[in-house]
Length: 331
Image (cartoon, rainbow, N blue to C red; front, side):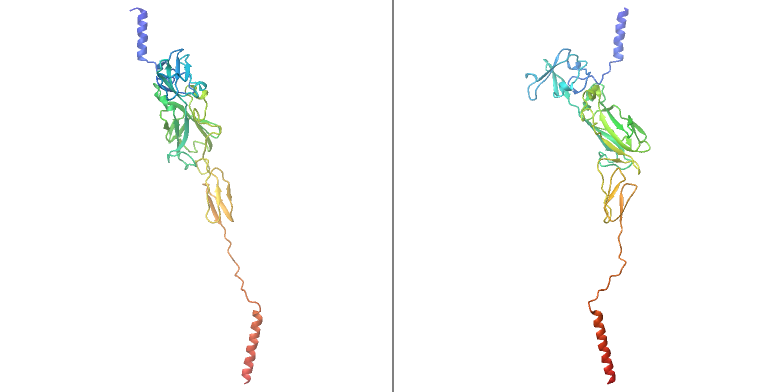
């Protein structure tokens, strides 16, 4: 066999034995792409270099209506869903003039919630010390899981401690869970309890928490809160730790009313206690307030009240009685 033919057969055999793996950039025909993604391969949708894709107005006939938008594709193996070009043109795009569905453009959405593993509810006013925490990701980016060989949209959760150090993983019950590029394959994705609020492992203080997705450079190109990131200018923070053990507190400030006439207000993160009362307010180690009102007992007996002239009247009556007695004895 000639050497050239043998080399060709070897290469074909290698391709069969080691097929080219799919990437998150490979979009199937009719698949979903997101505003901000770049470097996408849309060739599977029968889009060729120099050809056009079209969008049609809603409620019309794709096969007969004129396109409302037309875009020329220079390289279908490196396609950019530009926010400038597609930011107001989400929806189905078709080959043109073939009028076959090429892909669907969506505006990404991303939300992150911190969940109390004991109650299954979102952290709001606080959690009991020692409760494990988890995260709930709500997104439409899970559509990336429909691409060949893709487990899910790579979403990273960021947890930054009071010193500014950022964790790439969290520990709960001796199990370590990575926070980097979590493959999210559902519109509501739960991590389960992965963060033990144990001050022996995590210092007390305020932690900043957010999530983002930079698949195919989408966050770099389209850095929008609620779309490719959940981090706002103020950030989302939770309070971890305290003098009485780990605790998670939210924005709300609980008010404690003491027994009796005293009332105390105790903040969730400080030891300042404000009271308006006659008595004393004693803060306990757990942040609650105990009020003990001091009553003043009466120690002086009430005075006796007499009518005016009472003493003089008494002396006159005594004199008359004595005179009568003396006259009686003379008889």
